[in-house]
Amino acid sequence: MLNRSRGAMPLYQQLKMILKDQIEQGEYQNGDILPAESRLMNQYEVSRITVRQALGDLTNEGYVVGKPGIGTVVVFEKINERLKSIKSFSEEMAQHGIIMSTELCEMSMISANKLIATKLCIDEESSCFHLVRIRSAKGLPMVYSHTYIPSSWNLPLDASLYRDSLYKYLTDTMGIVVAKATDTLEAVLAEEDISRCLKIEEGMPVFKRSRASVDPTGRPIEFTICYYPGDKYKYSVEL
Image (cartoon, rainbow, N blue to C red; front, side, top):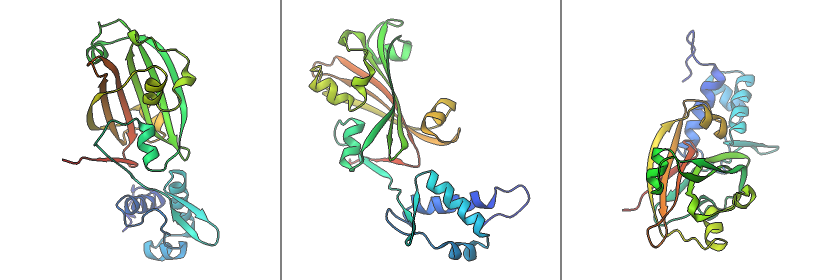
């Protein structure tokens, strides 16, 4: 039930968190209709304004959508990607029928720090490509990524070339084939830059994936760090 003590979180936020948790846990799935406003009012002993504020926040966060004559429909579907083969993020989303858009795409040359140099097998402070992207689905940021590529691959700096699948561009246009990749998965808290790019609150959990890939000869191709909203993405591993 709701906490009505002094200093507690506003009731509409508590109600939002309850409904959000029910959606994420699968109690209400994609396509289901949430209880009517009147039922929520009675169940949680709150006003209509409180209910509408909670549903409004869930709408803004991409969990539900209001449909006249129908009600509040759940549109959230947590993406579950199985670790069985090397795929770009675009390919992963396409398998789920999700159309991606690129909100930010910047390509530049930078000096490699110690971590990047180690991953790319290049000298520290030597030049490498740096690709920064924000990919979205249904208008909501789904991944914020930093990709580092050795300068020896001689890629163009035209950012427009990298707005779609990076792997597809590397393979089809540049003849660079990703033969093997190593992923490191961990949960972290969103710092200011990550929260701003993913449009989430600072300190919220995010899913971090670091990937190092090589070509068939073992030559490093890329080192990528991706951040995903923790409430919209998960991985399952088949052993």
